[in-house]
Length: 116
Image 1 (spheres, rainbow, N blue to C red):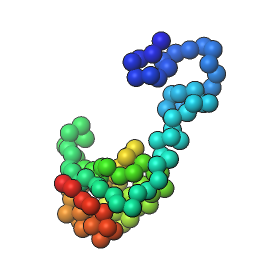
Image 2: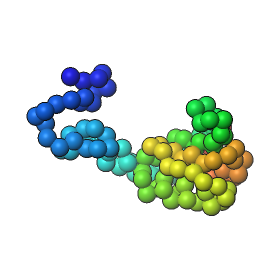
Image 3: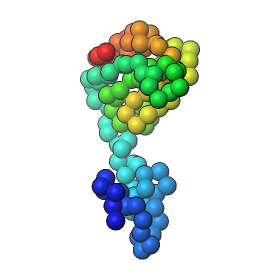
Image 4: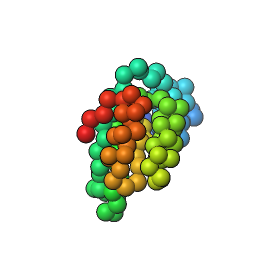
């Protein structure tokens, strides 16, 4: 009955399902993804992506702790510093355009170790 990933594909007797992660509500995986505490030393990876985006360039910051409040605040700060749009991903931030140098400088000022 599963699709090889441990998720339930279809069942008639389980009850309410979470619309975000697809797991039963009593075993929802959404909240567990963003429960990690923010460590003192953060190692971030900065890279540029174009593939699958219609030729648009996006700068991705990965390797960040999975903490929703931390990611949202960091994304807002990076968007303000770079003057561009962006979004929060599961474990990182995406910003529109090739902004690796600006992002690297902002993250280093915050005390992050930056790779890439």
